[in-house]
Length: 135
Length: 135
DNA sequence: TGTAATTCCTATTAAAACGATAGACTTTAT
DNA sequence: ATAAAGTCTATCGTTTTAATAGGAATTACA
Image (cartoon, rainbow over all chains, first blue to last red; front, side, top):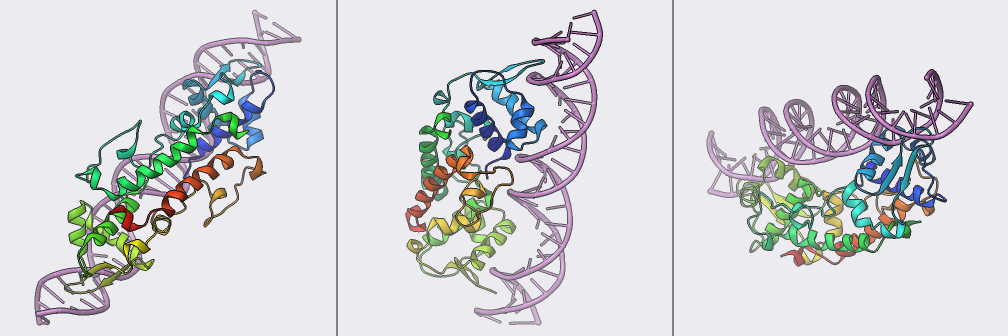
């Protein structure tokens, strides 16, 4: 299941990408337009900013804005920041690899074999989509 | 993340597929060989039986066995039974479709657009793998 | 210079999901 | 009769998720 965090984060990014100009957009406006709990969205936008996707302006008239062109924001990085590993098991993860406690031999593991394919196919999709492609 | 239920279920199916003959294999043997909590595995095998993947024999000398050829067990059905929907959001699920509360228009939703592709790519993998392919 | 609007940050909570465990019951081979 | 197995239901502890609370810091502007 996709977490709501990721879902809301993607929606917020999309919303910001659709906005004309580079004027900061307030959290409240995004939350209202996308039917998201404002406080929850707040924390999501914060992590998006901390991870280099968004800029912000504080105080009156402040808000959030994209700091890159939508076409330069690949879904791989967005998904990794919001959702975490793309792989369904750590033992096939490129960026978050971990060996399984059970499983003496990855080469012999059916789960490994299957999930490797699933990871590759998902990666393929994420690599072929930037934020611009979702508008 | 793939649940341990699914992981263990897949391992158990693989183990049973590798066993010579159609002799029932005891839960304890599978659990030991695959490093799985026996009680937990018990409940997993039960759902696999209830969903038509396994047969069982009770009493002394009993156990579980595959009731189909590995090549006739597609990963789509295994995943749906163990893990649930293949789609990451209900609004792109073929077998478990649900409309989103938020989101007035699926056609306009960026999450929908992306997750549709992810679903299709995952489905592609699962449809091209039977249990036999994982041995 | 004061006030309102806004982001920033930390902590907490409520509910759900997950993984595992317990124990009694039923069935079967010998 | 007994031991070895699966069956079934209930429960429990932990982690994760989604949301909430509240105040601090910053900024625009009258």
